[in-house]
Amino acid sequence: HVQLVESGGGSVQAGGSLRLSCVASGGIGDSTCMGWFRQAPGKEREAVATIYLHGPMTYYADSVRGRFTIARDSPKNTVYLQMNNLKPEDTSMYYCAAARGFRDPPRTRDFNYWGQGTQVTVS
Figure 1: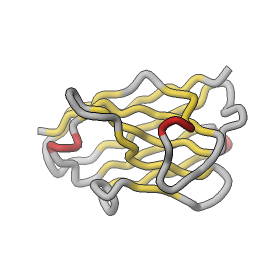
Figure 2 (figure 1 turned 180 degrees about the horizontal axis):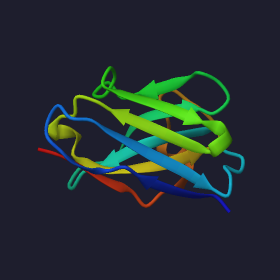
Figure 3 (figure 1 turned 60 degrees about the vertical axis):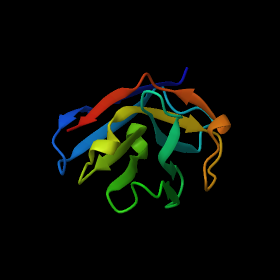
């Protein structure tokens, strides 16, 4: 059964960096897309970045493009989110998710597997 486990969150000062990791324990099933969403208190969930698992296609939210980079290590069923030049507005709970297809922009309803989340706090 697909289980997504995130790690790498923490507290950093503005301008700092973090790298989030998401491991799909037990494989990815029929998923062809994995990515990261975030949700801060009182705000709606938003897609941050997604990646097609069989090619170079990626999606980035306008607010993170140029600062964040999503990457995959398919043999390890792992997806990363390198977060550079972090800003206070990046503070959120970050969730890893997987879907059966890649779309730009992603549709939240297509993501049927979700991790428990990892907290990122920027001060």
